[in-house]
Length: 187
Ligand code: ITT
Image (cartoon, rainbow, N blue to C red):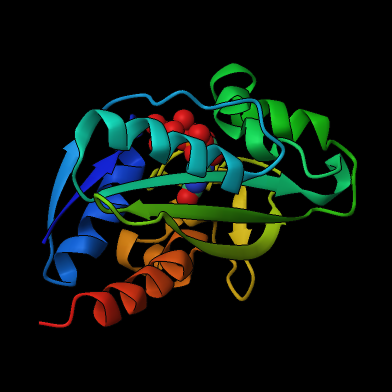
């Protein structure tokens, strides 16, 4: 089966493409922005996006809506992560957190998958960690240089992609997605 991944984010495509190929599926990149409604949850964004995309593309489609949720900022930037990343970026988050002791945060990823004439399915993954006091590392994308996953002394941006995929919110969501594919598409 060929899975078409709809994302404008190259970092996401690199991570997801690698995981899909590793499992023996083909992957196509559709670098298109789907309308992301103003919503309180990643799930709502994904479901609405899939509906819109299926009308346009009518093939097996995968989308990933994800975000960084910082405890001391009441979960901000959360569903606004892409906007916040492109405006104030990692430096802006670090400034907002200057002098704050509680640096706990998590990433969440909501994957949505739909096939023609079938219902959409969602797969959620999270990864817990802390926000560092400065940016470190060049790997990955987005907020990776300021996120230190639990159990590590390094930021996501210091870890090779296969290590990040193994412990990340996206990797956790993918494990569930592949379990689903295995049962749905037994050959
Ligand atoms: P698409 O909607 O086109 O897929 P996007 O970048 O707009 O791309 P999101 O709306 O899901 O994607 O925004 C999520 C933002 O959260 C993303 O731009 C990153 O800044 C950040 N983010 C998500 N996952 C991340 C990860 O694994 N590492 C670092 N930052 C991440």
